[in-house]
Length: 339
Image (tube, rainbow, N blue to C red; front, side, top):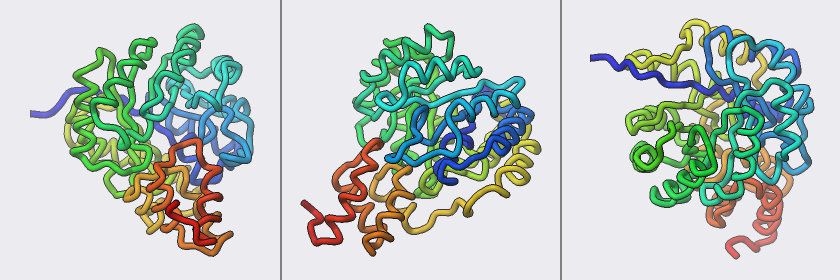
């Protein structure tokens, strides 16, 4: 008997995918991708700097366009989908969120480290006042046991979040890890639960399916898997797999395949594959957006990027500590690692 459950798809090509093109999407590329995703029936289209609103900086990487320019380019091409943004408290501000809403954003994903949901309370409240859907987005969930993830999910729910996300930001989880965390959150909260996968251990699609089996009804993907590290679950493949299993997504399989092949692939800087360094991200449990920063530091200090990633994992570095990558590389190059 086939499934009839609706799985809501959030495409992050124009946000997480920004990492893979060094945040250099042009307005024309954004409009083309957003328009294609909209025509394919994708329900949520996320558009932001890879590190969210106001992420364009020396620390996280300068974007070609401002947040407002990106959002206006996407909004002009979207007819039915929900234009969505990411906001990391401490980077994005109330003014950034108000600007996004003014540009047509209908939803915001307030992203915090898995143990720090409390710093997102005011941002969830702001989103609700602006009439936006609010996602509580817990990053790096492999770093906390299920009971801690549940505690933080409940906090987001208490702040008024409409949905809770469990994110495998390092691509470090295996299906049983996903089921344990997602399943525990599904049982603990009354709002719908979603899952964000990275492919550093080649487990993105398998983990997404594990999340669905555990009760998640929101899934993230990116066309051609474009994203930080080895990328995200591949939207077009995810839609195909879900369709084979009988789930409903509202996404036209042929159209989303064409968006990936005809629009996204030609502008990719490199194929999104699991090379040694991305594989080490997942193995060491390191934030996926650290990858390009690590490559640059390794070249500067003549190091193997894998050694840097192992040390970052050992020190339990988290998103927002990109500036420490150079410090770690310097210490390793001068025989001071493992301190």
